[in-house]
Length: 70
Image (cartoon, rainbow, N blue to C red; front, side, top):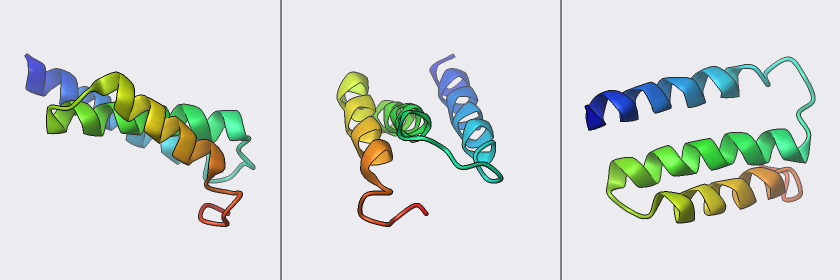
């Protein structure tokens, strides 16, 4: 059951991230996508999911400020 949930979460993150390809996403959009990706990666690694989501959200919100996701 846990693997099915993790796999479903990965698919959801991929689907959501594909939605931003033809638009200009805001910091909030990127933070939400980053939080989802961070939570999934942390869960798959067996780490703290909330911590992974926080790190992913910060990375997503700030990635355009350092010109990584333009």
